[in-house]
Length: 231
Ligand code: SF4
Image 1 (cartoon, rainbow, N blue to C red):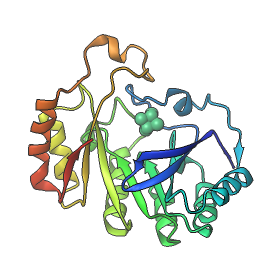
Image 2: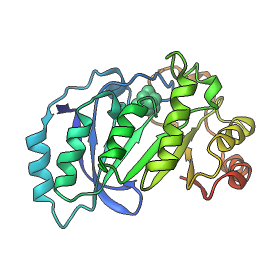
Image 3: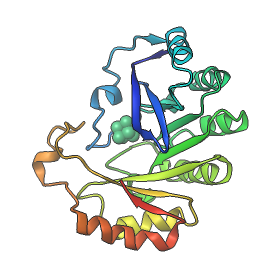
Image 4: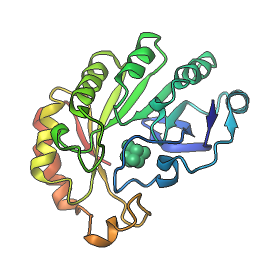
C-alpha cells in the first residue's frame, strides 16, 4: 500500500471538518477536465506507506477532525479497505471521494462500517459517459453505486463538475432525476485556471459556466433532491 501524497490540512475537502487529504494514484476514467492529471495517469511517484500515515495521524490527534481519501480513484486499490480500517482504529472519521466505478469495494466498506462520508462524482447522465469512461456497461455499475450510497452510506453527497460543453440545463436535470431523493447534490464550479488531463480542453472553448447559469442549474435540480448547493 503506497500513497502518492498527503495534504496535512484542509478546510474544504470534508464538509464541516478540518481534515487531512490522502491521494491515491491511477484512475480508470479519462475526464478531459480532470485537474489531477498526473495522479489520474498514475505518473505521480508513490512514496507514502501506511506506517508514515498512521504516525502522522497519531501526531495530529486533537487537531484533525477527519481524513479524506481521494485520487485518482481510490477504490481501484483493494487495499483501500485496510487503509480505512487503520484510520478508523485511530478514531478518525473517513470521507471517500469516488467516481463510483467499484460498487463492490463500496459495499465492503459499508458492510465493515469503515466509511463515514462518501462523495461520488456524477459526470453526466449515466447513458452518455463516453467522454469520461470507456468501460462497458458503466451505466449499470454507476447505478449500483448510487443505490448503495443512498441506502448504506452514513452521510454522502453526489457532485457534478459544471463545465461546458458537458453541463447543460438538460444534463443537470437528467442527473438530478437519476439521484431523486438524494440527501445532497453539489454543483461544482469549474476552475479554468488549473491544467487539465486533456491539455486542449480549456483552449477549445470556454468551459466556464457563469454564476447566473449555475443558479439556473440549481433551480432545475432542487425539486429532485433534499438539498442542492453550488460550491
Ligand atoms: S476527474 Fe476524477 S474520475 Fe475523472 S480522471 Fe480525474 S481522478 Fe479520474
